[in-house]
Amino acid sequence: MEKRTVDSTGTTSIPIASIANGLAGRYATALYDLASDRQKLDLVLDQAKALSSMLDQSADLSAVLVDRTLDVRQATRAMVAVLDKEGFDPLIRDFVGVVATNRRLPHLREILAALAAIAAARRGEVVADVVSAHPLNDVQRAQLRGRLAEAGYSKVNIQERVDAALLGGLVVRVGARLYDTSLRSRLTRLHHAMKGAA
Image 1: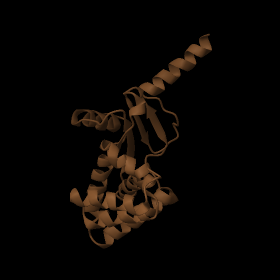
Image 2: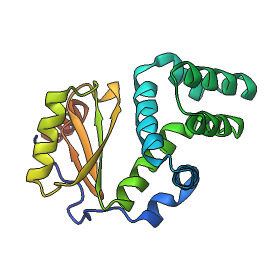
Image 3: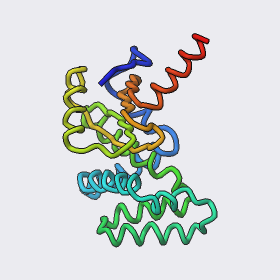
Image 4: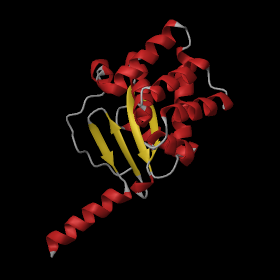
């Protein structure tokens, strides 16, 4: 993986206080604490990861998150029905229902990412936020873990997202460090280089 370090002063962990700030952090902290109190933390973390994948892979589900014309009750019913059908635990289902009722569905992805970051920070893990143009397969995931280990991040929690606008390659953020090998970024650099040469 070609590395372009935007900020080389990065840390190897994210303070929990900084993750818990903001809207997504507050919701994520509430879900984490509730799941912990009910002794369902591992289940909730696994299902939150599964829900993140569903949101990345389903255009219809993603549309419900951002459709401002949908009535709050309709959006809530739609999300709860999907989670019921997929066999999600009532704790996750009810949490997403609260998020929808509070008109926070557009922030659901951020909330789920914050939840994973809080869990990783409390376990002493480093979070790597990985954005790719297409979902990673097992081989690519293993190669990425190997590269991160070479860079000194052996105990790392990889959070994956898909963004087709990258066109290809990866954007990996670990703490304050950013490694950008996306095709979009390369084309942008080429464009600037050509403008400078003109």
